Length: 289
Image (tube, rainbow, N blue to C red; front, side, top):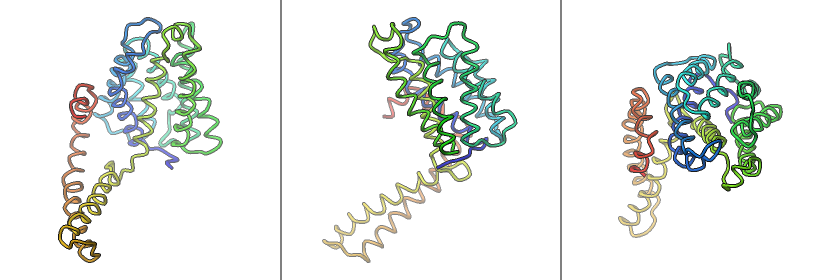
């Protein structure tokens, strides 16, 4: 469980959140019927987060304060549509709350979420319930309660998402337009997609910014599976010494491919921003799937 986050970790969380909303933008567009059925909520939220991701990739924020202020500034300049503006307000409030923070624990992050919601509500003249505002507000309320239960950023975000999903399901009954169309709120859905992306990035175990444990899995799995196959092909039955030799050789080759070649490639994609450009576009993702 990740109790505290640093600036570089928060930076990665935000970039992954941007990539996640970019991947899901069309499914969110399809839900867009309120306030007008123009089918662009997912696109607007994606473009807004993309502005932040671009700025974050140019910088190396050492603190949570700096990562959040870079994000808030970029979102303000790059906000698209109503949903993008509200999203920028949520992160602007978070940035205000995180000012001066080198790191952030669960209580600090939950308080930042609350401040973000306050900023968004205060800026909207007539807040409509059953929207991203409702989802973010109740998610932040749960985040505050969760931080009192366990002072962990991971736990706080996990619980905020859980409450957010429950609230999102209820939005169809909160708003007459959504109820008539039989859909949940697009903005609320987009907000949760971003949070889920941030949580996924936080849970990815990385050493010096590289996902070492992710690369370890194919080494172990291929070593065992292919090692067993080779053992039966060579011996006709299971033979432990031969299996250990085969598994070791396969694992060694896989380790060279993953650690010596794969991880430097990940680093290069992150440094150049090419990874985000490739995998934040739905067309590219669909072609690769």
